[in-house]
Image 1: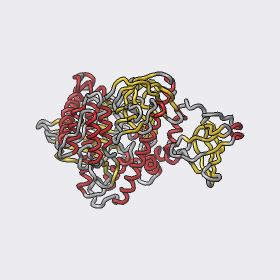
Image 2: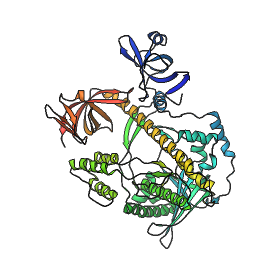
Image 3: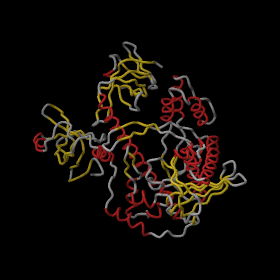
Length: 581
C-alpha cells in the first residue's frame, strides 16, 4: 500500500487511487478519492476492457499530462469491492498521505530497543501505581499514585512511559515518528505512531511488570495548589489495570469490594483531590466543554453495528484532571528554567466572532453576558444552556467561534483551559510533541543543565510540523467516519427520518438524524422551489418567492436520497417541517 494518494512514478507521471466514472457517452474518467486532486483524467476504453473495469470499479491509475489541463490515465491496479474494510482504510490513508507501514529498519530498531540499559533512575516500584483506561484499551502509557497525608496535603505522582529512552533523536524510530506525528484512530482500528513492540509492550505499563517512566512528582496543599514539583526518570510497577467503569463504581457507587482495601482508599483520595483541582481550574477561567462524543462500533467485516455516545464519569474526569495538572507543572518547570519549549496553545477568541456568536445565540433566546473576561461570559452561557434541547447546536456554535488549539514554540497561553503555561507531556507513545517535551527534560538532565537542548528556531519548525500532522490525522479520521456512516446509511435509501438542521449554507441545509448521529446535506434542488438565500449569520435560509424559511435548529422530516460511499456524502430530500424554532 502506498503512503499517499498521488505518487510520482516517472517524469510527469503520478499514480492516483480513484473510481471509474462516465464523463460522456463514450468517455470514462478517473474520479480521485483525494478531494484536493482536481485535474480531469481520461481513461482509454481499451485499457478498461483489458482490465475488465466497469463503472465504479476502484483502480489505481498512472496519469500523464497531455495537452491543456487533461491527464491521460492508464490503469495499473484494480481493487475489489469498496465493501472491503482494508480498501476503505487504503482510500483514507492514501487520500490523506498517512504512512501506514513500518520499514524493516524501523522494525529492527524497535526490536533492538529491548537491549537498552535503563540507566540511572528513581525506584518507585514500592508504590501502588495504577493505570485507568477504557475497557478496550491495548496500551497503557500513564499511571498515577495518590496519597493523602495526615495534615490534609496530597502527594500525586503522574508517571508516563519513557518513550524517549527507546526513541533516540534522528534514529530510524525517531524519523518515522516525526514523519507520522501522531497515531491515527479509526473505528475498530489504529495506525500507531510507533511499532507495537513499543506501544503495546515496552512502553505499556502493564500490571506487575517493571517499566521505565518519566515521573512528574507533585506535592499539593489541602487547597489543591502545587507546593513542589520534581520531574525525574523512574522505574514503576503498576499493581492494577483499572477501567473507568470499575473506578467509577468504586468512587461514585461505593463498591469498594471491586479493588483491594488499599486501592479503594487511594481512589477515594484521588477523587477528593480531583474535585479540588477541578474547582480551582474552573475558578481561574477554564471552559467546561463537556459534549459527549459518538463512537462508531464496527464488526470484523467493517460493518457499522451501532453508535455509542461516550459516557464521561468521575473516573474519566479524575484522570483528565491529573493529566492537565501534570502538563501544566512540566510546562511551568521548563519555562521557569528559561529553556525554549514546545507549548500547546489556544489563543483568545476574535472579538468579532464572539459578537457574531452573541447574535446567533439571541435567536435561541440566549446571549453572552457582558463580563470583563470573555471566558467568564462563555462559561456563564455554558452553565445556562446545560441540558437544554438545543445544547449541542449552541455549544457547537460556540466552538466554531473559538480558535483551534495548536503547537507552538511561543507560549501564547491556553484559553480553553485558562492556563498560562501548558504543554503535552502525557502521551509520547502516540504524539510526537509529547516525545519532544520528554526530550527537552532528558537532554537537559531534567533541567539540571544550564544549556537549553533545543533552540527556538528548531522547536518552531517542529511545532509547525506537529500541528500539520495533527490536522492530517483529524481529516483522515473524519473521512473514515464519513465512509462508515455512508456505508451504514446505504441500506436506508428511500426511508424517511426526523432530523434537526445543524448548519445553514447557500447551497443547502446540513441536518443530523434523530435516530442516528449521522449528518447529511439537503441540497437546494431537494427543497421546495423558491429563491433561497441565507441571512448574514447563516442561521436561516429564506425564500424570496414563496417566503419559506428554514432556521438553524428546526426539526424536519427528510427522505434519504443517496449514500455515496465514493464521495462520502449522504443526501436527503426535504419532506416537511415537524417543528420550527
